[in-house]
Image (tube, rainbow, N blue to C red; front, side, top):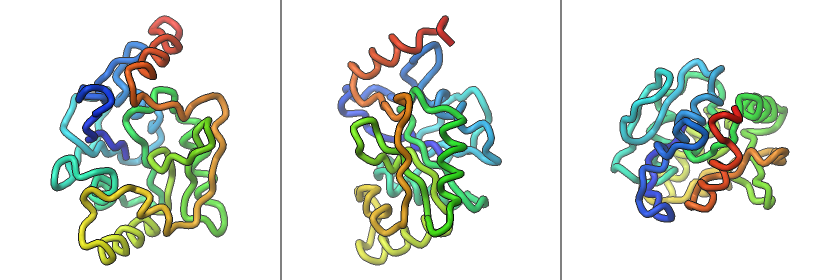
Length: 191
């Protein structure tokens, strides 16, 4: 599940998932890392993608990551769901595979990537689907709505493993400076 419905305030409201880095959109880069998925969903406005996806829209539109996760998880039939923000230019299929391996570990409900600064990124993770559904139901019962709530309302209720970032795969493109850095590293001819 790729979450692609944010406002991109730090990018001046640009359509961040469609920003090109290394000759392809950030959204397509995230989708490329999901090559082994049985079903891939994009939560957010319908956009053209390099591979077939199931498009889902949270309600209300731009309701935040927790509302987006709730909209997408309804369609998940697998025991695990990978959740990726659409602004991760360096995510690779190997990284997703490792997150899934860690999430499947005994006693855990998910595995979350640690950014290079040591902060966890719950939008770069693999979760047990049942745990996500249970956590969303609990959040809805406590708060009455999911709209506008941070994703950490969910993740604080889960038993998680934290996977250290090796190689800078957790860098996201929240600012034009980060986009420029990613473009410099991922030049189209560099592969």
